[in-house]
Each structure stands twice: as C-alpha cells, then as structure tokens.
Length: 253
Image 1 (tube, helix red, strand yellow):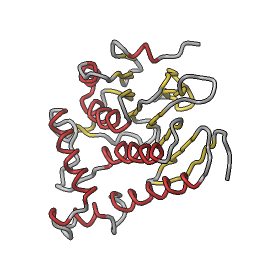
Image 2 (cartoon, rainbow, N blue to C red; image 1 turned 90 degrees about the vertical axis):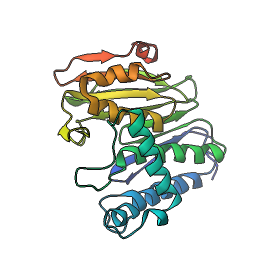
Image 3 (cartoon, rainbow, N blue to C red; image 1 turned 30 degrees about the vertical axis):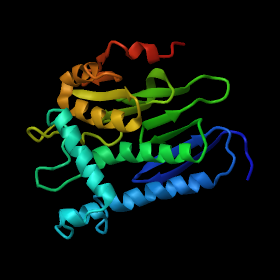
C-alpha cells in the first residue's frame, strides 16, 4: 500500500499506549512487525504474566545459564547501570525478585527504532508511555516537537522542546503514581514530582531518568555531570530546576 505521507498508529501494549509515526510511509507492514516485537517483549519480560521468562526466573524455574540471549543482555545492562549510578538503579527488589521494567522499556523502544531504520525509514518517532525516540524530522520543520507535562496537571504542558535523533524519558508520579523507590534504603522517592531527561537515545535517557528520580533533589546534578545529557526537574513543591544546556532544546512561543 503506497502512502508517501505521515502515518501514525497506536496500540495498547505493556499496559500503555505505544504510538509510532513514520513520515513518507511506503508500506504499513512495518507497523505490524514493530507492534509484534513489543508484544513479544511484553510476553517475555512482564512481571504480571506467569508464563513470562522473568516470572519463571523469579520462581526459580529457570537457571541463569538457561536464560535467553535477551534476558542475559538485560541483566548485564542492569548491572552496568547500577554501577554507573552508584546503586540508585537496581532491578533487584527487597524480596529478592527482579523487575527489569525500568530498563526494558527504553531498551525495547531503541531496538524497535533500529528495526524501522533497517527497513529504510529515516524520519519517524516512537512514543511509549511518555518516552520518545526520534529520528529525522517531519516535513517542513527540522525537528519533532515534544511537550513535557506538568506533573500536578497532566493536561498542562510546562515546556515544549525540539528533538531530532535523540530520546527523551520522563520519570514521574503523574501517570502511575508513586512507584519509584530508592534502592539504597527501599524508601519511596518523593522529593521530586518529575524529571525529564534528554539523551542520545531513549535507552540511555530512560535508564538515567529512573536513577535520577530515585536520587531525589540531587538527581539533577547527576544528569548535569553526564556528557550528552540534559534534564528538567520539578520538585514536590512545584519548583523547576534545569541543567545548564537544557535551554537550547526549548521552543519559545
């Protein structure tokens, strides 16, 4: 089916809407392939599905040596992120079980983007649960416009940024409520309401956004010290703090 125009499709997978928009669409079979990929990721990594590889591993039904290639990669990347964040990112919970959802989402979005690029499309974006991976740009504008929501009013946008060949991830309380814990002491991370992190791709932005949120007020300083990353943080009193280079991404009306 020939389109040669932007096509956007959304499906609910992993308990959240996943939207893909491709500019200059030629054949919509790519949508089916990418959504099937996300469904497969959900089947393997969901902590809510008894038949998933994660659930079986947590129950001791699968030995570490028998894990799939992807699961081994996730465990490796999770350990790497734990070390890089001083322990503020940790998929191991207090009960000893693992929950890799904090890294799987960004990882799978990046993988999906690579599949779209391999199919020959260079202008598109993927948005999953507020996290976005962008490549190229729409027609007539050199970047995609992305709004950052107010964590105290999800219908309000506090900043609009320009994104091209980068990712942005937001960790906050406005969709899933308070769900992030400080893994160093297993207390709820409640000093900030949200932190949006711009990075070289969504995987990198997502994992560090999760860790930065768990760090609380000092999370913005952690992002400030990372090369190639910027962030916009809103604390629990509604006061915003941004990294020194964030402003260059802001679109001013």
